[in-house]
Image (cartoon, rainbow, N blue to C red):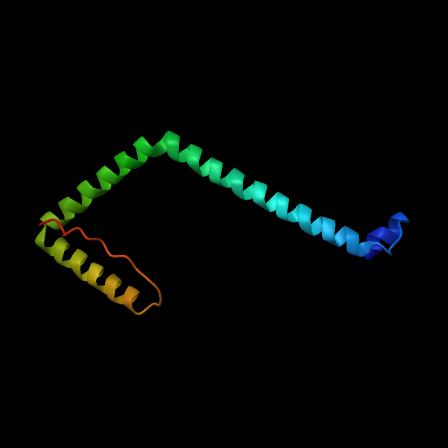
Length: 103
C-alpha cells in the first residue's frame, strides 16, 4: 500500500487512517457477500424443493428395494455399522437417525 501511495504521489503519513477505513469497508463487503449467498440459497431452495423431495423419494425407494434383497441388505447394514463406528471415533456430536431400517 505504501508503494502505491508513493507512486501516485499521495502522502504516506495517513496510512493508518486508510487501513482503518479499508478494514471497515472490507467487513461491509463481506457481510453483503454472505447475505447475498444466503438469499441465493433460499431462492434455489424455494424453486427446487419439489425436485429435492422427488429425489429423496426415489432414493428411499432405491434403498427399500436394496433392503429387499438379503445379500444387499446385509452389505448395507454392515456398511452402516462401519460408518457409525467410524463416526464414534471422531470428536464432537454426530446425530444418528432415529428411524429403523426397512425390512
